[in-house]
Image (cartoon, rainbow, N blue to C red):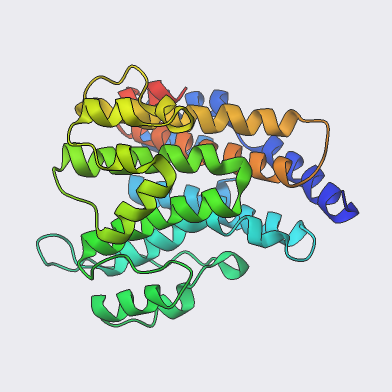
Length: 309
């Protein structure tokens, strides 16, 4: 293993050590008021962007913006070409940027927040940002590593990008393939059996590659569960109804946390340690966002937060 990867892995572990973890998230969630939660947040690395936050949405976005900043810093510590490992893992930020520019289901356009700046970790954001219409956005995606989403409606664009992110992660980041398959399971199950709508063609093909053709062609939730390969079926174990997919989502996050922590404990320094750090940092941000929501409700933790910790 090169000295560059060793140095990057050492710094990745140090970065993880600064984050609040489950205990810090519980402390934030237990705050009696949202203002108290913000003061608690100020003692964590999330204070970088949270200082000016005045409401829950702003504070939650500050948390994810801090995560992205630290992942960009981590990418800068890696040897030449190492940042490519992180690009698929941060695809969600680029998807969020695109989603914020699309009209709502009722046709209205809300004021878009400042886009996440991905720097060297972007896939094609600078090109996508210049698209003036959904049709232009689809054309830009087709010409990029994202590929064709299968349509230019807001739903097709975002659904196609989400499944493409799972496909790209599975191919480019082998240690994260299990997580990518889990995301594909959740996305497919939600679209087919909660919203009762078929996946766009390209997303359907990606799902077949990740989950097998038999699973992606299932006509019922139970049939879908039964046809999943063992490498993907874990996410729906004991989830008997599609209406309980939120529990599967929480399981997915807990699995990413456990797998990432195991990678960090490995004796060898290298890409797996870096992937593990990205996983643990991402889960921490998700957990803190849920903790802030609990604090905003007067310290009453919700089911999602309880499931995460």
